Length: 235
Image 1 (cartoon, rainbow, N blue to C red):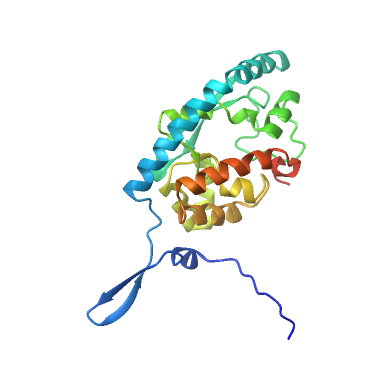
Image 2 (cartoon, helix red, strand yellow):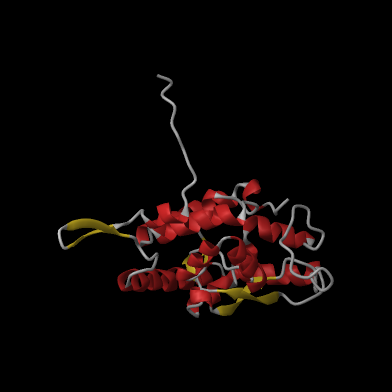
């Protein structure tokens, strides 16, 4: 015997069957496939954790936020913050807030384009912010407003969401939970991991949402910040 292990990439149906429920219909044993939705208890506990972490982080990181804002103004022309429309819970759009890491009007000529390796649109200090994820800090205010969670699928722009759903309809299941600042796809994958592979991670997360899981992902995020390859753009 070669004692080889076999691995496979799960389909949407196989992901949905992860937490199947047992029931009887007359005398026939059956399994009920999960709807990939959070329970009321999960939503309440997750919201309490989000508020506690966001408030604590804003208090502790307030000096870092102030210094970052000053450095952006010294590095390039333009506003410190920028807001961009993203798709959130149940497909409802909202405006995400980030520190500006690209030159002003970076997409005025090219239109919506995913960030690439060595992207000339990114400013010098912007590269540092992206490598350390400092540009994500203003999203803590999105969390307090209830538009985002600390942990969840990363929110994407409507332009790209339409493309992803057209290619893979199951991509829309990512919107069954609030988008997050960090997530399973960010600690297990990289910035340049394909949208489909990130979706698999996000759906696996939805199946296993808990305070314990969120805390584990938050702790793992610090490890990822020290890994340069995790912040590289798409090729």
